Image (cartoon, rainbow, N blue to C red; front, side, top):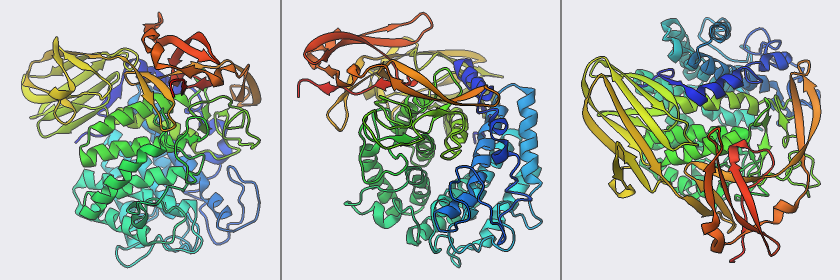
Length: 622
């Protein structure tokens, strides 16, 4: 089994993670201490029947207790636990003693709140496992226990693992399988539906222990959700199998709930068929960057690069879902989608130079100043760069902290014959095969350089298979001078089986062309390898507020002009497009477009480096 921490980032990937930790990700508790450190929601400030204050992050109305406003009571549990999860996982992956020590303290502080019966959560005894309406019971436990699982896998502390097991057992006692109904409450809302994510915890416990009870509990939870009275219904079984059903829910819920269906599908054929049906339809909700729409609700829309935005939390949840789906289905093709989402949509929501994130964004981002589009009259605070987004909800920034550790954790998988290089990028993987310690290093500037040097080191010679994913965008894969095509791949893999010596190497180069792709609106977007390219639009920066004594800022952007919005593309000029690299190794693409009927030469840069941008171009040939 591969544990979290067996794979470490190196090179530019490590530097980027360190940059996050030196900025708003590492200091979020200092920027908003009132939400993260002052409010001990898992300890002395647990929610009780007497809790009246709703003075939490994002609160607009005091004192109301309808199903919508009740969500605010649990919000800080999500903010705190998801941030701690991302911070601590990043800390364990990086060589920084200060971050390591802080991670230990954050972990032990939560463990100290555990009751004698094993309970870790946000409710006092008067409410726990007995909420009649909107609540964050299972959701707060899911986020907390995911965080603790990361700490356990990084430290291998048996004391910590026993605490997690006790907490899981308390949940199973509080909501006994077959004789309770956690998803049937009156006026449940966001937290109630988020509770299905507790399957993340129970499935990982099943992997760690081989205890079938955890797996069966996941199945029961999904079936209770499907039969339940929930606000977020997109992944209920009856809707998944309805060919006329169009997704409408809160995007984050929809994309995280896929994981619960996938776990159920691993146990029941009817859910396997339902999962396949759902995944076949998913493409209609993905923008060219791979981002799943929903700003915040999907609202029965399909993807449009200009008019349907997406939320960073949805990007993160879909990425996590891809990773679990690959484990459960062995569908290596999904790694292409995951990598594309990570290197494009995820990076494209981070500010390229400042420590801030956009909560919501569109692929064609013509303005980032609290509006989805320059012509929109609708104010939306989520469409700007912020290190917190406290005025909306502090959810996307904590999830920003979680995405990169999950990417690193899944760069290699294992099978009965050896190992699989699943995701590409600079990393070190430590494992054993036939009790022989093995270290495999990817030395590369991927995705901007499509050559990878693999260094395989073992304490003695050992035979195993090392498989390499053949990306769908690659024309050819050259491995140690031998050329392979897609036809040579088996299950999207090229496999080398040999007796590996103490110091072996494998050199891989991907042969690619510039690709001209068509989205569901008939517009063209341009890519090369795993990188989407965009026309960068010059903008005016507007500082909205400064935080933590000016160290961080909320910033909006308006375009200097709007002439780029109408640029068009013709396939007749496709041969004019060329790929080049800058001195620092980043690629760019140049070619001819049309402004009205005038041909104009333009430069495209990697999507993940942009603020304002144009990604799709109307086809003049239509």
